[in-house]
Length: 127
Image (cartoon, rainbow, N blue to C red; front, side, top):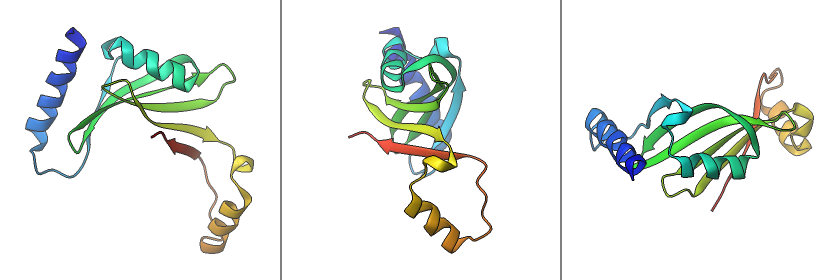
């Protein structure tokens, strides 16, 4: 219950700071111990985290989303976005260039011949 109130307070502060007509998302970093336990549990289960290294919260279009980033046992870096209900909104994972589908890399090279990525993130929206 205390975490629900804390989340409501976070949302209220953001809403006051941003105003109700704002389009841009607002975010803040959190300590892992500031994230409600059911959010951490959902992110751990969905992300397969061995450890969580970063936590944050974002409010966009009136929705509060917790963002937790960490490493899996295999060393993969993932970010899991979790709604206040515990529902997983999105999972992002850093990937290597050789994991990008060939048609995607061909399209990138066609449009930006000299492009050299420094970081590639694959993501999937969970619905």
